[in-house]
Amino acid sequence: MPAERLALLIGGWLLTYLIHSTALLGGVAIASRWLRGRERLTEWLWRTALFGALFTTAVQVSGVNPGMAVIAGAMPTLVKSIVPDPAALLLSSNGHSVIVAGVVIWLVTACGGVLQLGLARARLGQLLKTRYDVGSALRSCGAMHIPHHIRITASPAIGSPMVVDVNELCFPAWSLGEFSRDELASVMAHELAHVSRRDGRWLSVIAFVGRVLWVQPLNRVAAARLRALAEHLCDEHAVKETGARVALASALSKVAARLPQYPRVAVVGMASRESPALLRIRHILDESIQPSRKESWFTLRGLAMGPIAALAVAGPGITFPETTLSSARYTISAFDDAGPFAVTLENGIVQSVSLEGVPVPPGEIEQNSNHVFVTRPGGASFEITLLWSGGMTWESRPLEWGADAGAKY
Image (cartoon, rainbow, N blue to C red; front, side):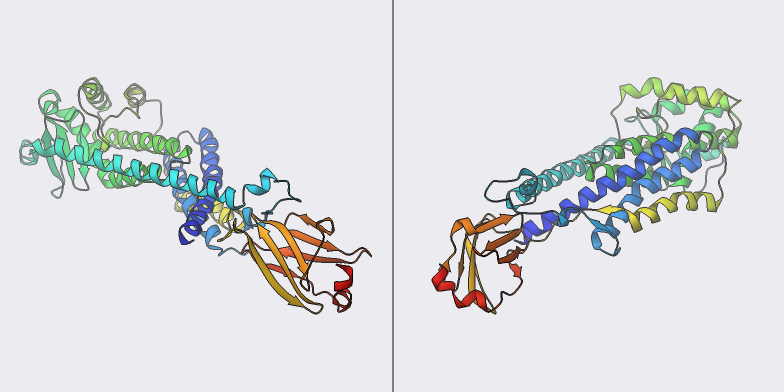
């Protein structure tokens, strides 16, 4: 069935992605312990690992790499004799039902997660209906330099300054009256850094990937780390631009105090529950901490792309055959040099074999996984190999097999 083949393809993709993403994200989680002070490199590695696993998985599942390891497709699908083997049945028609059910659960949960993101975005839109433009007032007071393409608004419904769109910053209405001029300038520099880094788009895509590929729990770790790194680097930029460490820390503390009073929104903001304000304030005020090191193009691309290329070329992949051995009872009729023969199967198990129309005694039929042996009293053996597609292959019998078949059986 087309639906089953699609589910098996998706199941193989998800399992391959789980292996690749675990290797990449787990590697970055370990490596990041030795990369303190190199936040730009750490951020690049997390992003590359998060999205690189999608690329390497696509390469493996598409079969572009001739050396890929097809794990599931190489495993036996039948049973030994007539006693079911649980490991083999995992990939039989019953096992495929489990895979299909798992894919359905993944799809339903992923759709629910995406819907939740959509509802959160809609909720934000409702909250921001009350916003009004304050860009002209801020520009006229000369408190800070604001690029002309950036729209500045304020809303009484939000608790933290945030990037609403690629060219809009929205401040909470209370902040315009409580922030000092230096605090306002520091916050503006912080938010403009988010805009220039395109954090709004990056973090939205990361959130989407996390909801769709929820089967990988490390995606949540990556999203939290990337959000924290974005805030850290924007804090550094704001301090560099304004030189006002105390003002930025003071503004952040005011936002953190107000934030619990307002609804939670899924956008880039001055403060968030994923990025503890206290740690950020300590970091901002600690003058002994050196700014994050600027990395060369070779360092960023080379260190990140090397593992991606290696995993795409040599990493394991999991695929499932497009069809399974039928669970219905059916008979395959064929011919070889010795004459006609037929094999009857049900649930991948041989029920009977006939040679030249004569049934073979059950005691002379042996099934070992997907190999079936018909052994004559004299010791000659006829081997049949059952296929995933439900068909079979065999070595042609010599002519003498058919000469005395009627007398034998």
